[in-house]
Image (cartoon, rainbow, N blue to C red; front, side, top):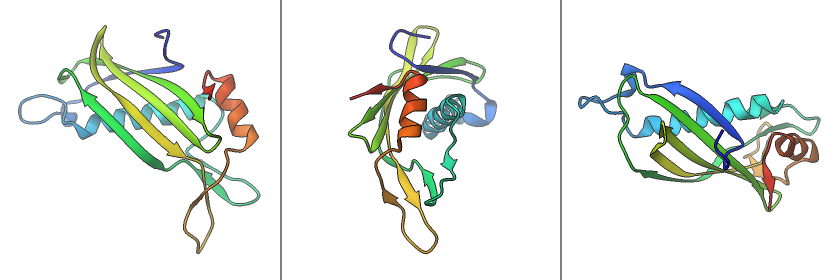
Length: 144
């Protein structure tokens, strides 16, 4: 892992991820980041949707930034690194960087909110429960 990341995932670019020029089609990078986020949550003993006595919890996206620096091609080995911060007690920020070796391909920020999902009601933001914060911090996330 790089000194700035708390979680990394390796992935090979599939042919189906590329466009006619043989380059990774840009929205696929966000899918790679999302897959890495899910893998990180599972490694922390969490999941994308959590059952709680008060109703299901989840982490919908509220913001994303993405800067493309270099193309990736079919067969390239990508390293997707996350640097996770719990901000303001309600949001989780995943700064991310996708590299081929040491060359940065994409970098950005994915922000999620902790929300409760109840039947017949729109999702609404809640403070991140302590058990989630504890598991994220134990897995390398920082608190701000």
